[in-house]
Image (cartoon, rainbow, N blue to C red; front, top):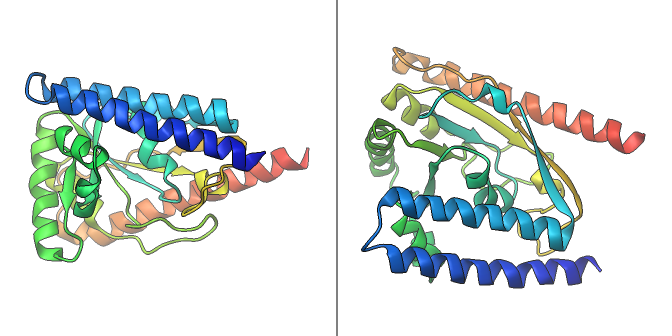
Length: 247
């Protein structure tokens, strides 16, 4: 049954990409960037709905009252494809930091370009850092928040990846707060997995971490603070899930 439900989700997910991306691309020459980004948020909400409908997979957000006024830089745990395709429906409008190769995916990549996401070439570290700093100043200067995955790539549920400082550099360059975010999506929609288990994903928002006025010497401490916040919330999620399952 789980394979059938996951297969139905996949069909609707692909259809959603084709439909929403086509609309975004068609409206590219005649609408504002803000309007195209709102359509992308509608696509994320669509993904949440079909996950609930097809797979019985829902999400619950904890700590939303901690969000500061935009703009800010979200540093989020990366376990699954779930956070990439749903979080636009859970936060004020933001742009993602993405690897350049995603732009070459038909329809999906074209829509990413049309909505002005931040694109970097991971192998060109110096160039990537320059782009991150420039784009963070520009996007945040326009009032748009940014989401970046500090671990860089998806890690399996229960594991901790290497935390990179790109998000810290972005927040410091723009002088905006860092918002740490944790979730356990990997327990239900594991990386590289077609199957999706029913359940409730916990999405936790930590206390904002200010960066304004700090110099480069603070980067290491900020990175440690972010990792401690995210992994601390991951431990809370794990304890909460264990308590629920034990009832």
